[in-house]
Length: 200
Image (cartoon, rainbow, N blue to C red; front, side, top):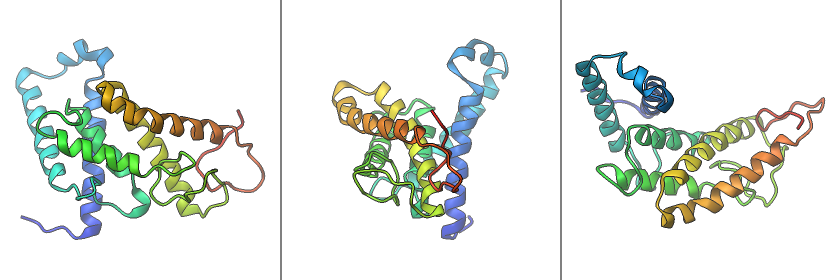
């Protein structure tokens, strides 16, 4: 058994979560489910499922007490959101089944990272209004974290019971509002530090 240092563990978790999600979603999109069934034999599908389940089992052991998955602070909550998507894409829902508690804790962590402006980022400033005047590290990572986390919360909102959906709804609304605000920012001659901006 190999022992991983923090940097290698971070890299493994990020790659595993991203890979599981992308692999599963690339192979079985809902609109192509019938065609996808013909791509692999039943035995091959069982091997894929077993591999994904082993990956998810390992990923679940890496979760921190606060619900996050290990990464650098600038990688949160994006990395945790990718881990949630890996579980969701294999049918594991918050509060249900073998990984329900882990998925719910991770979703709660993602929600806890939302700033007063609505942006979903662990290291972003916590002002009422979003500012473009932030350092490159914070700006780039905030845009990434916000996009991935807003996606996972929107997906989770759509599959939750009314009680859980009511908890997620205002977070998704604020995230959408700040996304629409950022899309209205005009491009100027000065380089921007908060993600990819464009004129409306």
